[in-house]
Image 1: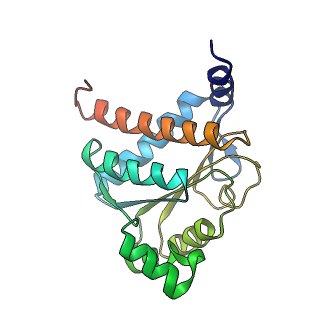
Image 2: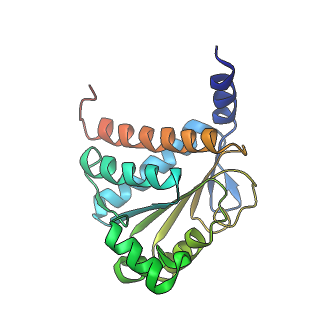
Length: 192
């Protein structure tokens, strides 16, 4: 097997899924099951789902906004319209490109999925804090340091114990795609 794929699989096998900061799920399957149930709960309640991230994580966030809507049948909303992002960045500063729109849009019970390899990006942390103040549920996808700021603020947390962007982002994308596929299966949608 390719050395990079072996390394990716090793980190996937050691990925941790947490309920808050004190309860780690015993294994990957149990954690994925809990994450899928959390998304299904929000689907059933018809709450809104917002995905946020920077750089490669923004591409994952944008992709998942589409997949969770189209394939998962969920109420997802994109914060990546260029006019909105540049307006927020220009008027309030880049640190607030997520928190300002979330402050306008998030309602109690909505779900915010924060994706950040480092878990320490100021705009992600600001977005999480605003979403929390608005009464949202927070799921984080992080890597690098296990004590990163985002992971300390999530209701559920996916943590990849690796400091390589490519591996962390690949695992985040893989897990989110798995959740969409699990939702489709539970809904009885055939996956081609």
